[in-house]
Image (cartoon, rainbow, N blue to C red; front, top):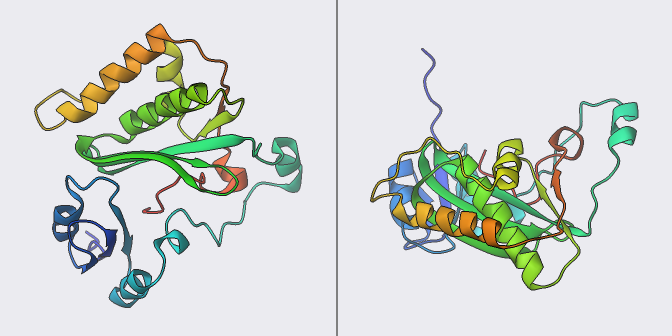
Length: 213
């Protein structure tokens, strides 16, 4: 059995900031901290360097992406529509600590963020992110579209139902309270916003990606 590689965790925003050598120590800093910002690194030096820098240079960046698709395939897909917002979720474990956010697709300016929550799944986060985006754009009477990299979440939104197998409990109650609100919003509101699948193979990670892979 291969030995699991050690990771180091930089916390820019949390109860305490710094570099932490275990996920449990990192988790203690971000739990119940609204808008926590953190990322894992392969070496202590890389994590320490990131801590001294601006988190925006490390979160959601995909500097080395090179598509493996052919030129013909790339031409067929085209470029992203920048009159849009992009949404994404991150879950440390499945289930695990979960959060989601929405950003401007072109500038990557963060428009909204929720979490981290004690327990959730990536699919639930993606679902909540889309619905939050729909409400956000409707409130502003915006004609922008929404990019997501989750086919599952798009399906749930269109069915107006969160089809998660995660069982409800006290730990994940805040997440399911949001799920119930999201489902109610979908059933009581209309919207004209187009939901579009982000073409990861052509464009790299979605701009709203938390950069923690």
